[in-house]
Image 1 (spheres, rainbow, N blue to C red):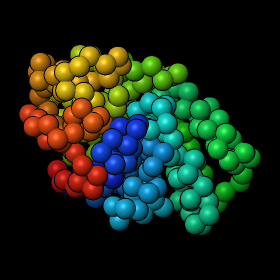
Image 2 (spheres, rainbow, N blue to C red):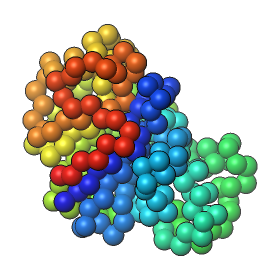
Image 3 (cartoon, rainbow, N blue to C red):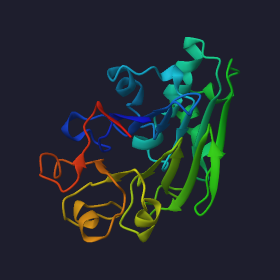
Length: 242
């Protein structure tokens, strides 16, 4: 059984007072929980949800915008100051290693070169390829969302559960492919039907065939919050079991 906790499910701008993207996955098949994205507010989001950041074994990053990966420097430094010993694995698009170093040096100069009790290892996921990281088999698809590096749609096999995650993207057939017969699709629904460059609308999800068994919407702007949707809508602190 996989437990999915939406510690943060909001957009970049805190619409509705929600934390940025931070989705916690726990499964008995994994040695440690993993995160889907780690936005800048993630440490607070995890603690608000009663989850220990020090337990996180790996972070899968969809793309390199601050509301999806900006919490990594804080997660690493929190581990350093709390005496973490277990390694931390980060899997993200090409360019993740360099961008993480730059982010750490920008926010905390000198922090990227500090020797710690635990190793931070970055694995870069290329669209069209499959890799296993921290016991999770990840297949990456190309998203349509400029971020200075390829943005990814992810299909993760966690134990016996398949979870697809759009990250941020305009509609692309890769969404249907990544979520084909998945147990869960976690999908951006930034706006209801207004065309917004590089982002997914609720209308896109209703106009195309999605074969995932369950769909939960995230990354909603103020335009979306409070609307009656065809699919389930996430909220900070939502816990589901698959």
